[in-house]
Image (cartoon, helix red, strand yellow):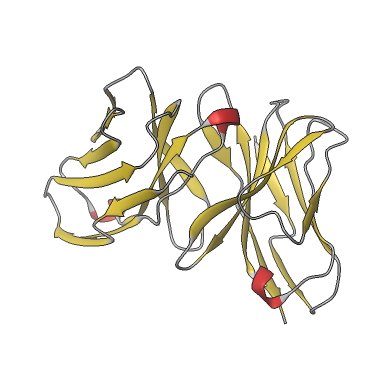
Length: 111
Length: 110
């Protein structure tokens, strides 16, 4: 059974700081990995999708890396802004596109 | 361009009642999913469907029933609601690469 751990559970940073969110998973037999953002009381917004054959993916100030063999992914956020405050979820994808989620990292960016 | 709609968005029901949560996609993607989100557990897969009339259990299927007679719809039924089924329920659709999530249904069982 896939287990996903996200570290740290919560992070508070001043505006403008670069930061890294970590995700580890126990079963390396994944097809892809998605990073999501969730605002309080809202649904999930997909940020980045990395296929199992890729090492990293970039979108704007976000960069996600994947080391499938070691069961790790990181989400790098450059020049953080207060609008980045949210919970970030990591979800490796297995057979039949089933996602397994970590409990998330709650990010607060202070003005 | 709603993509995925869920109804109702909020529901309060009593223990023992039957409740059906609806999920509709405006595309025609094959795979659809139901997840529940609870504090301390994160999101967990309840059931999924690979196509119309093809469904399978996820991690936490007990107490739930699904059906999929049309590609666009994937209803989730709680046959006899229990307090432990108080949760936020998310429907999701597998796109060409990413999985997309609906806005969620907040269900309270009293």
